[in-house]
Amino acid sequence: MRVEPNLYVIGSGKNGFDLTDPFDCNVYLFDVGDTYIVFDAGTGMGTDQILAVCQQDGLDPDQIDHLFVTHAHSDHGGGAAHLRERVSPTVYASAFTASILSTGDEEAVSLPAAKASGMYPKNYVYRPCPVDRVLEAGDVVEIGPFTVETIPTPGHSHDHTCYLVTGADRRYLISGDAIFFGGKIILQNTYDCNVPDTIASIQRLADFKFDALLAGHLNFSLKNGRRHIEAACAIIDRLGCPPSIQ
Ligand SMILES: [Zn+2]
Image 1 (cartoon, rainbow, N blue to C red):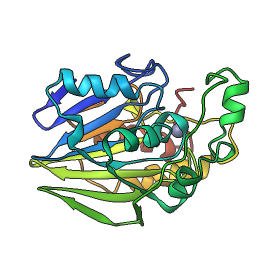
Image 2 (image 1 turned 135 degrees about the horizontal axis):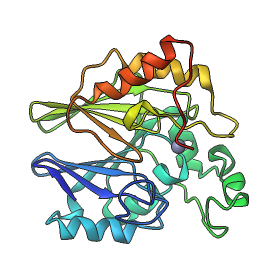
Image 3 (image 1 turned 60 degrees about the vertical axis):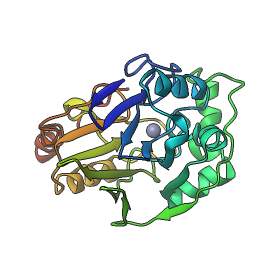
């Protein structure tokens, strides 16, 4: 789904645009010339559909050379191994995320509990995915005329990272599950979901300037994306907690 001249949504599930597997997060692709940058990978159950969406949009899947993962949860990182096998991107992630991805640690992403609750199919398998480049806070990766900056944002999960993409005279915040349209968040009954860290991460994001908010679920926002951070901060400033989408 082409959104802007350089930006596509190539995966999205039932909490987004019903484009690919129902469990998929929003998967974003930037066309930066002769190469593509993808953010998050979906669950892996819809990888064929993601690649088909690319082809329908006139994109060559073999040009997916870069895959950045916001966090290891199954709906974001579970598909990394599948994409790596199909189109061999360089995989980037934080050290925390890399440790989970590379071992396929289902406990670390609370998958047994998610299966028991019916959130995920019982036969779903989290396949390990090697990570080619481990990112630290503030790392900036240059890819063609675009840059990708690493912003650690723990809270939704201990390993969560946002990315600031700059290119084509625009700035995009890839917010994963750290913040959503309307300033909402996801609080879950998982071992590493933490309200104070979630709030500190939102306050950290408020220091960055960007045009578009590209969140991991629900709608995205192409202009004035900071208004969603500001909506959350207005609640936080009153000692409240932004509403959770779940
Ligand atoms: Zn998540």
